[in-house]
Amino acid sequence: MKHMTSICVATLTCVCFLAVVPVAPASAAERSHISIAGSSTVLPFAIVVAEEFRRRFPQYKTPVVESGGSSAGLKLFCTGTGLDTIDIANASRRIKDKEVKACADNGVKDFAEIVIGFDGIVFASAKGSTTYRLTSRDIYLALGEKVPSKDGTTLVDNPYTHWSQIRSGLPNELIRAFIPGVKHGTRDVFESKGLVPGCKGFADSVEAYLKKQGGGKLKKQCKKVRKDGRSVDIDGDYTVTQSRILQDPGSVGVFGFNFYYLNQGKLRIATVDGKTATFESIKDGSWPISRPLYFYVKKAHLDKVDGLKDYVEYFISDEMIGDEGLLVEHGLIPQNEEDREAMAEDFARH
Image 1 (cartoon, rainbow, N blue to C red):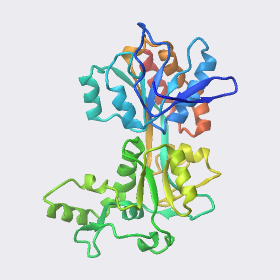
Image 2 (image 1 turned 135 degrees about the vertical axis):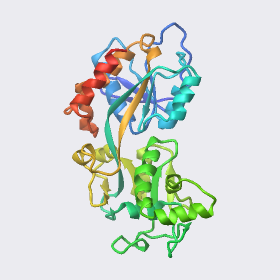
Image 3 (image 1 turned 90 degrees about the horizontal axis):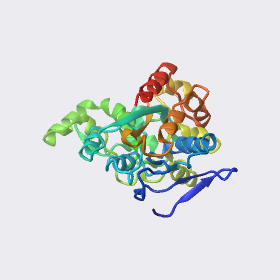
Image 4 (image 1 turned 90 degrees about the vertical axis):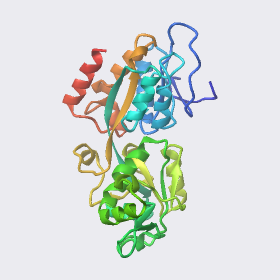
């Protein structure tokens, strides 16, 4: 395995994470450690659970928790069922049909889907810098690849360089946005719930443009992000995005709410359509850009990897993801009690 960086707590319990790589082949019938990879949004929650799991169950080794993004994690997850493959893929979006097929083609036909809770996606700037009060329309016009022409008859390459060009009342700041790269699950949600709603307000212009192009789907066009340097993909985790906006006052970054919650001393979030992201607004659905958080576990590994079933049961316990669970203290928005109980009961049958 490649070089690792370890996070160690006072008791010398270590949780390892690194860019996603396949685990080394198991030398025996069973593997003695749990192997996890995927979403950088789910990563902080998984690290907390891994640390607590080691304290609660000292007979097991500390789970190895790796990052790399939802898509990368699910790709590794779907490579097969052998013990040289990961046991769990963390994801900030639901597994796609094409990924389910890839899994099945490689023999991964039986896995459990676990929803650990919810998270919002927020736009944030450096605390003490520019305040943004945005609408869905503003977001699309600032970051969409193509936007309506002045006469509204088609789409043109995005001409906007400053927020104030989009509408009066927005700051006279250069448009500089740092958004998750395409391998991150957050990118999918940003495109679907951050760009598409504003774009749909210009449906006639989009349809006219697509007709001139010989056809195409409105939603697919609406998801396209400008590539002229005003929007910058970040392939690292949210700490990289935060570093960029702290070095560039007036810029905005796209974050998971849990990351913002843990870094409120450094970040200021924008409102969207008059709403502010809070635990309550994300849980009740009034915050427009939110999503469930998942992990997927191979059933074929439950009896072959030491502690795997206990880890999953511990993760989905009220102690971790309940209304007053430990992960709520770290920014997780919990599911309602009925859904949590149903999920736990379903997994117990595996």
